[in-house]
Image 1 (cartoon, rainbow, N blue to C red):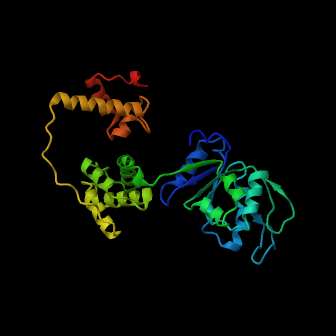
Image 2 (image 1 turned 90 degrees about the vertical axis):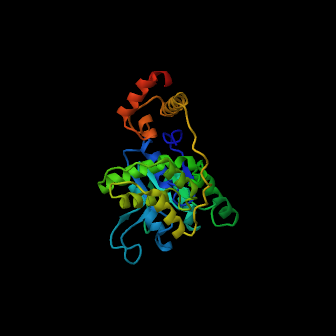
Image 3 (image 1 turned 90 degrees about the horizontal axis):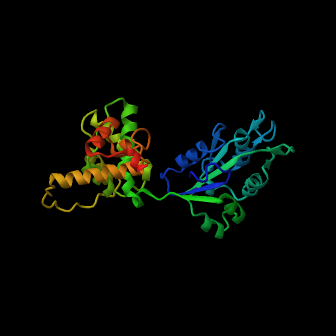
Length: 308
């Protein structure tokens, strides 16, 4: 994302529903030279077939029944900025050549108008469909596919990146607590493991919904996330796999405990580029206050400057 954002290259974001395709599109736009201009979203799966061309390129008064005034299209509104074509695989075949023309030449005509207009937009597209299969089956133009996929980004489903779940959960807990105006409840290691045992067919969106439900039920007290996840999984018809019976608890000597704590803090600092504070800082990664982390670093003799 950081490599392609400053360019004007067309980006195709691929992934299952709920993996965060729109978030990636917004992040690319916000890191581009077009950030001060609008990001215009078009949901290709929600537009009636007969309204596609008008929605994309606009129309003039009298172009069709109900066209009582001139109306700009999404590409005109996004001039100088970015158009995000969500579910681009649902684009009708007969409109695809007109989209290809905009991408290649930066030109279009409004419905009912003979005037050719120029437009300067960057296109980011997203789909949960297999466009290569659609190309083979004649449902998607091959030339448009290659024009859209100049820089493809594939978002893996949450079940394939379960190590991200604890960090995402902590982030969503913080968001939900602020939204609901309640104290932020802590999340335990056991609850994180419970989250990782579920496959999350709805991906990140499903995880966020479950986290918000758990925060509502906590009412500012203990999170009780494990109960919520188990109930949600049973309701969705995908019960959690049985856990192995716990073995004897490990006794960790103080010297080994200190060594592990030091290694964990160093790993967090390295991932954060030596930063303690702010978004993506080590304190956020560890889920502790920056002042608490600074105190631990001093106690263990860890200097952040040596890790940048």
